[in-house]
Image (cartoon, rainbow, N blue to C red; front, top):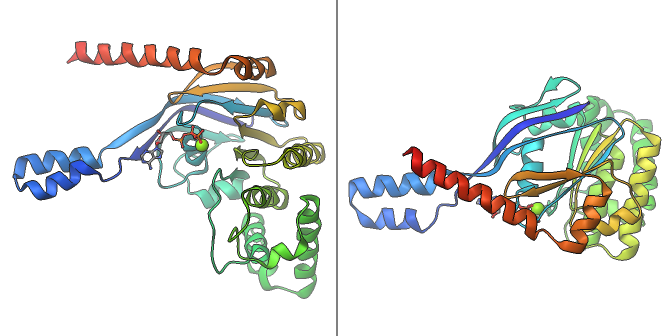
Length: 297
Ligand SMILES: Nc1ncnc2c1ncn2[C@@H]1O[C@H](COP(=O)(O)OP(=O)(O)OP(=O)(O)O)[C@@H](O)[C@H]1O
Ligand SMILES: [Mg+2]
């Protein structure tokens, strides 16, 4: 196994909310302290998830809205907004605790569910710098020699064409004013340019028209054929992508836990029957835990 995640827990800070406001206005020392503490406490979103990816494999994560899929993805990439515990190993090296830049350099890639608009940064510059940073070529590739520059630009144009986008797009600001489907294509463009070892794709197929879905599937297939060691973890809501891609594993994430793992048949079953039974199973878990905690007190 090249990518092994063990017992990963993920927390997010609770939003500073009403409790905090009440605390500020209250003026009662003790109460205020407690309220602030509660408002700042962290909320556990992912409760000990384990899975592994072998070279060349395609795995899906499916699950209801709010089940923790994006939190899991962001924590895998080392987003500092998420606090994580557990082990994330890539080719034997422990990545937990490392920053996103280190993880990217080691070959981990995440495409965002909601790509951010970055004003003042051109697509072409962003891509060139990302590749240079990953390959450790640093400034040599960024501003060293016209040859390198022309070559990398030609490659970028070739890749963006494959994604059915206008070559002129590379002179636009990153994601600024791009349509939902175009943003997803730009995410894929990064993957094509970076050639990661492990690609985590968070809803790369959401918001795309039928042709877009086919294009994404075809791009992933071509990429897998050219690099048979690359592992892909895809978060999706749509088993329709299975028409074009055959996953080796399907995991259902509900309530921050992998409640079931299987093959493509599991995804088809979900399409027919929905998540109700998994959500119920998770609610029973949660009920039992609450009871257990009460008894322990
Ligand atoms: N920064 C945060 N502060 C508070 N709650 C958060 C934060 N980030 C995520 N959450 C909560 O964690 C839960 C899981 O969110 P997450 O985005 O991981 O879900 P998801 O499975 O990706 O859902 P979707 O299918 O809608 O994309 C949600 O209830 C969400 O509101
Ligand atoms: Mg999500």
